[in-house]
Image (cartoon, rainbow, N blue to C red; front, side, top):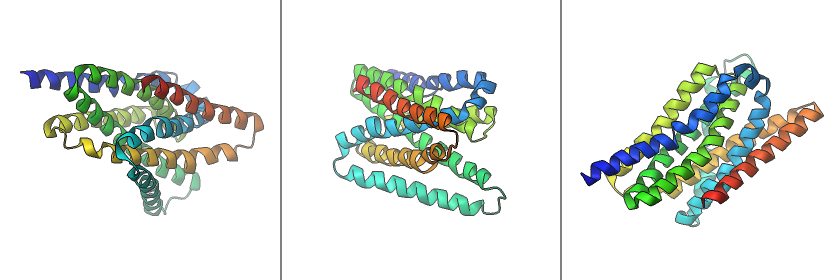
Length: 251
């Protein structure tokens, strides 16, 4: 009976930390015309969110439990994403337009990074609830706090890359549902997955650093209009600052 109650709490908390966190992005999509007009600004904001999440949230958590190997796995994540992007480029070599091909490579990378991140969130929520309900609740609030701004950034980035509104919602819900897989696996396997959490966190940090650095930041540099470039730069910094505040508040 106690195990059933723990599982119910884990599933409810996972819903709050993953699916409920999508509400910010869904509200953004409800103003689609406005969102499309400012999509390049949202992409800059997303770059800051991804970098802030990597350096203020994922890497400190990974270093706390993973030691020196964290740097290796972060670099592994960056190289792995580079190789995945190379493969997607080759797969779409027949595409006629370079800009379209870049969108086709970037979007899968965003989805993969988010999916791994959501899986880790599920693992962490389940592991903390199995340790202590109070710790589980605190962890759930922390996950919700960092997922909300990140999802807003991701929704805006996908709009900027030309993905349809309905597809954005479906893809993000499917990605968020993966957190339930992480939570249920952790509950069933006990503490088996816990030693691997730092590795997964480091790889995800590498994913986010690669996306921001190889795709989003260069777009700011290529912006010809100085006023727009300045605003985009400020939004990137704002994204970093928001994640720093969120991470500082939940540590």
